[in-house]
Image 1 (cartoon, rainbow, N blue to C red):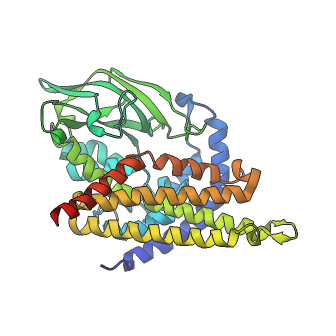
Image 2 (image 1 turned 180 degrees about the vertical axis):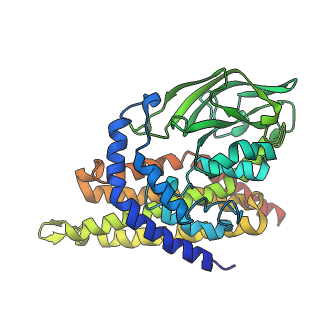
Image 3 (image 1 turned 60 degrees about the vertical axis):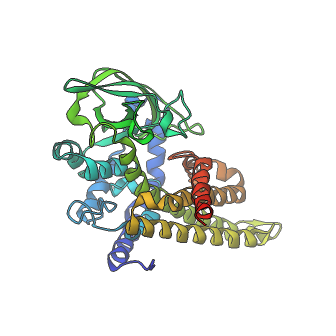
Length: 408
């Protein structure tokens, strides 16, 4: 196995770093100030996207830094999962960068679903506008009334009725639901409770303007609404859409979900490690510039040892993630479940650890909007729940390990 970056990866990485340094770093603080000014609360109907975002996206597209996650050489960059991983890490240095390059969740996952499983008509109607950055999308899976850590608990129903399917239920923590450009959701729900465990559920495309779709609220995470995307609660009351909106057919929901979540977790984890590198950079700068008791903070209280521990943790998690990406490319996501679960535990915990140390070093400034640290901490803590909590991923790893010994 070889984790050396390809020539394509090295080229894209160099160009991404240059673009972020020249066009994003200088305006990101102003972007977040503007977001907080015009999107101050949970009133998502008034949320706006600052004009600077559209300008930056146009620049990125002109430079060919667009849809880099998609393995198709015509619609995307044609990179493997392993080739894309270092690029996701570069984007993780900035909270804004993934959207600028049209590589942000949940749109990347939804684009992958439509690319791999969507019909030609679905790709023309929904995938093409997403690839062009003209619209945004939502993924509706988690539910408030059941333990969603076990996805088979899902109660939202997707039932065939003649030429239509009818959706009833409630979803929450549906990321992107508040974005002013969000046009549709991919909804996962129960179709046949008597079918085999992983053939009971389906995925369907639901335009957000369909009768019976009600966005009830945006949910604050650590007091922040994450505008202009938002994480919302949405109700489906006898929502009727054509059967043509089903993705891959009735009962195919779990197969699609595994295909969606494999590469997507690589993206999440590598962005998390990029964010950890950013937090470590901030730690080093503060530690060398700030003086207390006559010495730089870096030379006090065991901070040098903390630097070493953080460096080791980030590098370990990066190698583990590269291995998972390599295995996805070699044998597919279904045969890399343990490796995917491992990085989903490791990377967010590393980010949380590094950000926590940086906040401690910054003191009061670390808890304010003067640094991105509180936002990064929220990202880390949320990732330990999103796409499955740590405990579920640990259980997956343990089951795979136990099976090895059973075979012996």
